[in-house]
Length: 152
Image (cartoon, rainbow, N blue to C red; front, side, top):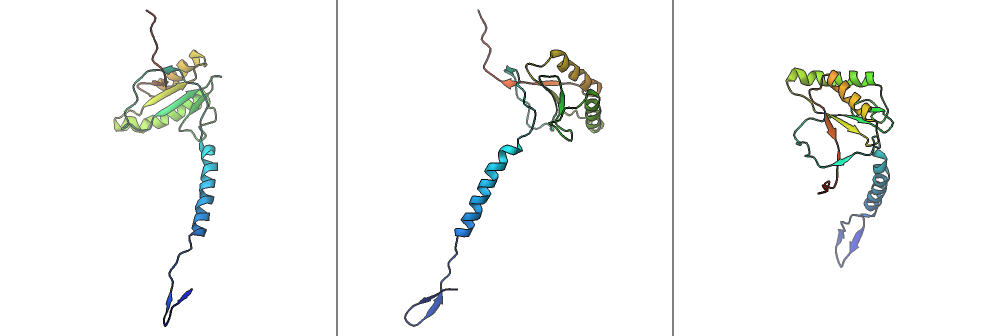
């Protein structure tokens, strides 16, 4: 503790050294800046561009099946969402996820993200698998794009 000398009294000076706190904050900032890009996960695909309405925000988290350009299936709720899964595993996972929502009387949204370069048959196969697993309706995810101009 430091003492301040005045004429006839000694009183303590209350100061807080903020330099160590600034050092800690800068280290944390650097750590977060480095780790944030590494947290991005998912499968890189190119979605077709079109104009469509967005989903209402009050819905449950949707089941999203991704079909990449080579025809592999991915599911957002699987143990490893960035690892391809087989059609049988996809069907089993989706049916187990949809069973509780059927009992509750509400349907969980089921969506398909298909790469624009993917074989159309693989996307349709994914939609058929989802319907066989218990999905009442299956939606398609697109990327918002410029409005198509009609030639007149």
